[in-house]
Image (cartoon, rainbow, N blue to C red):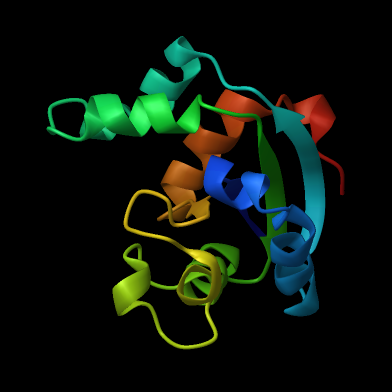
Length: 138
């Protein structure tokens, strides 16, 4: 079984969409194995988005993700990373397929409602930033 981190971002939280997004993932047969609400601090945000550190949007991205509490979740299932990315849709909601989370709820490329791990290897790294092994349930 594969796991993936899913973050429900501030724009979705402000619009009360956490339950809807979690429900979509569960409705696709993915198992929710960890869940919490967290107001991320700057240090954690910078570690999480370290891959973008040298990009011009890095500061805005960090400021955005720490602006309000968000929901952090781990989902598990066969091919979870790819399945979740398909359910979420393209990063830019304007380019996302109809019926995907980002097409339905995303506002723009930054305020696109969710983050999902992009590979099984990155999922492991990301999950360990937000959850201990004891906080993930089978």
